[in-house]
Image (cartoon, rainbow, N blue to C red; front, side, top):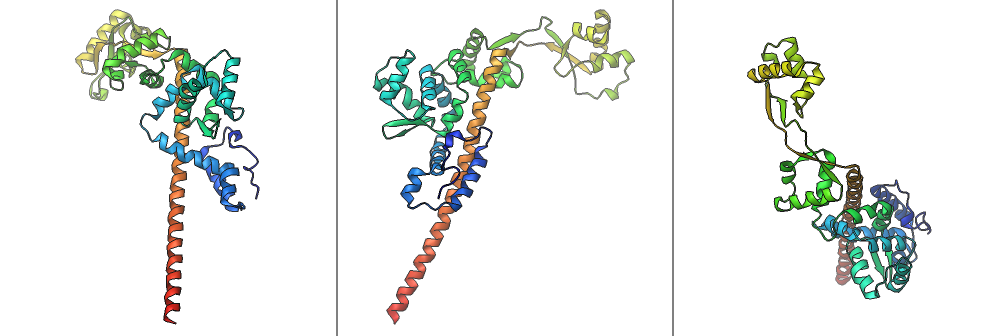
Length: 342
């Protein structure tokens, strides 16, 4: 029986189709499919291939180093070119060698296989079918980001522990101080990581010249009697703190009087001051790469969710089949005993 997905390669699935929804759809189609033989199902059915890919990918994703290995595999121009080539069909290593030569990459077939294709196979982007290689569903989804992936290769170091990628995604949430970053990145590597990112123009230092900043305390202001001006000064102090000069501009009060009211508020334990620490923030290029990295992570989470659901359903089906087989065996044994008595 031909199904809708039989005639449509899995790599051409609509971009906005969620993997879990796709899996549910394939499950419904499988219920009405009647292949001639199990071999035909395994060799001709795209649904079976999709489920098989998800099963293999699930084991890889569970590896704690998977994201790191994936990013490192993508930070290579030749591998990105191979992904682009394989998006058009199946290729042998010899065919890949010829296509790479067209773009100026001259390598032996052994080098292409060991250095460029195998790392893509190891992270589930490419699969080997006999002598030919082709992209998996994950590979096709990543290929949609090929143009942006070139930026990763150009700006981020290869064969790394991916601290740079981690730092960029952390800073995408908000700017952070060195101490805040140190809680997420190994201290012995942080200085080197920040230096690399600065040199690549992916981050910048946001150091305010007015080092002394004023902050509100947690004390309830209703417990103190404030003058209208004191209240105006207090209410204009943001959560992230502010310098006296900027506060004066914000409240339209002279700097001298601003200091006077800040001293009063400090005396009432409503305001405290401290030096403003240097903070790191992303450049526009850094934000672009951060979005790409987050999109890749989100894609992996989708695959993980889909593969987990698939394995759960497969396990449940195996248990049901096992129970059915056990019941059948009991029935057969009962029949044999009855015949023996007769």
